[in-house]
Amino acid sequence: MSNENILEVENLTVSYGVVPAVQNVSFSVKRGSITTIIGSNGAGKSTIMKAITGLVRVSGGSIKIFGQDTTNQETDELVRKGVVLVPEGRRLFKTMTVLENLELGAYQRDDPASIEAQKEKVLEYFPALKAKLPVSAAKLSGGQQQMVAVARALMSDPKLLLLDEPTIGLAPAIVDTISDIITTVAQQGVEVMLVEQNAEIALEISTDAFILEQGEIYLKGKSSELRNSPEVQKAYLGI
Ligand SMILES: Nc1ncnc2c1ncn2[C@@H]1O[C@H](COP(=O)(O)OP(=O)(O)OP(=O)(O)O)[C@@H](O)[C@H]1O
Ligand SMILES: [Mg+2]
Image (cartoon, rainbow, N blue to C red):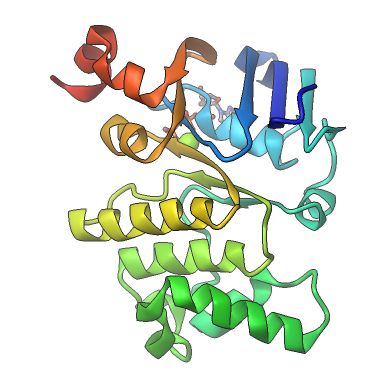
C-alpha cells in the first residue's frame, strides 16, 4: 500500500441478509484529498460509510486505514484511531444541550483541560454555536443541528472524518456554511470523505469522486472531470 493512501477499500461486499447492498467496491483515498461518493437513494453510500466505521459487518473484501487492516474492527476502536462518522440524519441527543452533545463527542478523552481546549478549537469553526451551548439541541434549526453534529465529531479530534449527507434538507445559505467548514477542516489536515445525493455540491467540495449505482462503482475520477462528463451532467447534474 502506498503511503499516499490513507484509506484503501478492496472488493468490499456488504449484505443485509442474503441481499448484497454493496458489491466488490474498490477505491482509495489519498492524503489531502476530499473524496465523495455520489449516488441515488439506496445505492449503498451509507453502507460503505458504515462498513468503514465498523457499524455494519463486512462480508467480503478488506478495508485498510492508515496502512493497517481495520476490516470489521469495532467502532470504539476505530474512534480511538481517529476514524469518526457524522451519521446520516445527524443523530443528536435532542433532549441534551448543545454543550452536552459536544462533550459526548469527546467521550474517549478523560483529560478535562484537553477537552476544553478542543471545544474552543471546534467552536472557532462554528462561532454561531457559542451562544447556543446551553440550549437544548431540539430547539435548534436544521442547519444548526447539522453544525452540532459536525462539531461533535470534531470533538474527538479525528484524523479521518466521514460525513454522510451533511447538507441534505438545508437552506442554501447553510449549505454554503457547512461546505466551507468541510473545506476548512480538510485544509487543517483532517482527511475527509463525504457522501452526497446532491452531486453539484459534492463535486464542488471534493477533489475525487465516484458514482455508485446499485451497490457498484459506475464511474470514478477527479471531481473536475466528472463535472464535465456529459453522462454525469445528464444523470446527476440535470444539465
Ligand atoms: N439495515 C438494513 N437492513 C436491510 N436492508 C438495508 C439496511 N440498510 C440498508 N439496506 C438496503 O441496502 C441498500 C443500500 O442502502 P444504503 O442505506 O447504503 O443506501 P444509500 O445510498 O445510503 O441511500 P440514501 O441516499 O437513501 O441514504 C438499499 O437497498 C437499502 O434498502
Ligand atoms: Mg444513506
